[in-house]
Length: 348
Ligand SMILES: [Zn+2]
Ligand SMILES: [Zn+2]
Image (cartoon, rainbow, N blue to C red; front, side, top):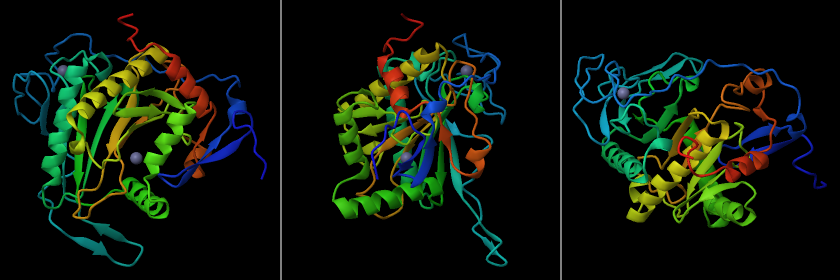
């Protein structure tokens, strides 16, 4: 097969982590487009909101009162999707009707007492407290019977369905290992057996050498727009060392993670001069009893914005029925993010 120019011709790219394909149509990037205009996001503008259920000292819907916390604050979600006291059970009438009980926990992590901040507007020191909290929570949940995976994530912005601008994330701990993680574990296992090196370890080396999809990096981490990115400005944050979970980070690496999270979220805000919406989350080893030498700690950022603060990408039609598709190439998205200033536009 002949080599062709990725930036010109339609093609599909393979995601070795999820083992899925994405269709790339770079020739369509210039087509006229009347995109959806979203209402302006109403972000928190005051440091304290008396009506916010996450602000210090306020009462939550369930009746509990938040402490006057000064750094991070973690509590069990009052409307949790998973509950630890779920009785074990199974339903299997035929092979077509299968259901299993799912026990678990849903935690909420307030990143800061300040209602008006986001990761992009917090200092490295403040984000470091968030990193330490994530490490503690992962270890605590991992140590519990019946917890086989811990999903740490953040939904940012009304466009992503986040109902409260107060900087916060969530942690869901499951009795089972979810499908997305299961696929990534399998792919990394096979790759390690075949190559005697880690999938993301090798991928990171390759991207650090080529640099065309690199957004930013420090001693502990690098951020790239992955070769197989689906969302226009999707990025992958990879630890330089092949470690399997956050608690394995050394002190300097925790500092590095705080720094790189600040870096990427500032660049996102600067792209369209808006508080950039996204879903982000860490993928870590499952918390079963097996050792996971194959697993390489990373985080995915999935932002919905396409070409301005108000125009978002839709996953509809062909993408719901066949496979995801993108217009601007991952290389040009990376170049845009890379060339942005690393000082927040509100401070510039
Ligand atoms: Zn608040
Ligand atoms: Zn992943």
